Length: 162
Image (tube, rainbow, N blue to C red):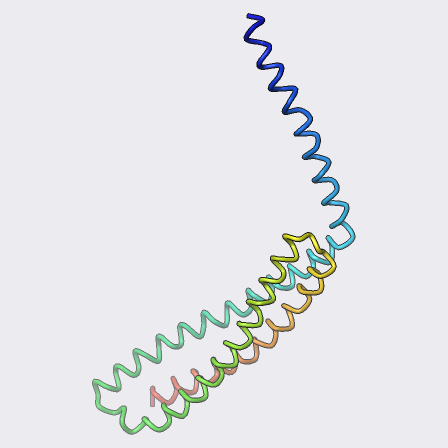
């Protein structure tokens, strides 16, 4: 019985200091992050709010695009699409320019998110906070473009329903 207890005692002797040192490292990380914690949390909440607002706009745009596709299919069947072709092409060109602008903003957002991830991994909280503060401005610059695309789709829908 004693022979079975010796390996168990040795295993515990090895694990206990490891667990204690892990708690110490976590405490050191928290003290490094603590001056920035509230600001980081506030920025993340702002980013989430902006993301949700833009997601609602993107979802409405998707629904309107589906509606446009069905209206175009109906006009093709009724052979009334040729009369509206010039207006459709002009609207498509405007939406394409807006999508190109959005693509540029999204590329910048992706790079900023990657730098935020790297800053978090490196525990560089001052740079992390600076990078987090860039993201909401980019997100809010997307909102009017998404609204513009939505209004262009509304005009396209009204054109196709007449």
